[in-house]
Length: 375
Image (cartoon, rainbow, N blue to C red):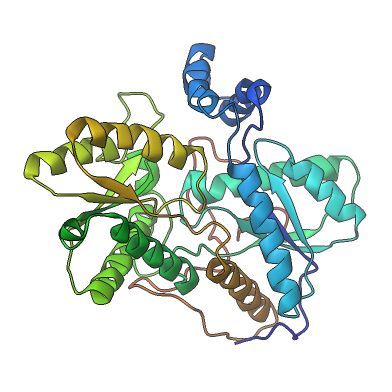
């Protein structure tokens, strides 16, 4: 394994995230950015916007990214990793195009990108890479010298992610009355995506082309459930469920929905449920609304005790895992063969996304992959 004192082939890390509104006036412009080109009617944007207005029009994602940014910088400094960290968003300020301009002005020429999405899918990986390619095209058109941009592999099965999530489940179980803890069901929740997108996600080593999104979540959920079993001595039923569906009703999306799952568990006599936001790195709007508001309201209506475990956020173990991934990729770029940290059955993913990985409805150029025009 490489060490922080080894020479780095990169001169900057870009924290690339989704972005979110930071006040009521930002909400509709933000949603217009997210849905641009998809023909979503204004009424639908206003309907989704009401979720944000429940929280004064502020998504917590930007503040959580500021905390992660600060935690990464502090961790790198403590561990002798001389790598400046920048932050850019796909859909709201600071926009990734502006951040790239800043990095180029600062003389950065080899950039490693960390996306705040841990899994393989179009919306969770390739769309980040497409937006990155779009930003690079803009600065190229301005005559600026382009940096080479690479992306860290997906990290859903890194021990620093999974062990932090496991401790969150154990803490949530302790919030339940003692007589319910050993029999509580575990509901691992992630963002629903179209079945067609799930079928073409990946490829994942050992699983052939496609199917990576569900396979990765199942692998992570099983690993956490097994760890909770070992820690408590109780084996609990668990299931992977979905939330935040946003597509047309006639298009099949991954199911079951978390609220439907709570109804099913209640009908089956489940005594309590731990909702685990497995697909999310931080407590952003889809956690605050879809789990903490909508799903909790459904559970209260049913009289079903529920608790929700924490996301990894800027937990020091997760931040250390991200540093580990930086060093792992740096060693690979130097031609070394570092030991790759992973838990579960699937093993580490590719450093570089293969050509055509996680295709969208209308394929666009994507940076930081084997088919990148900006390699």
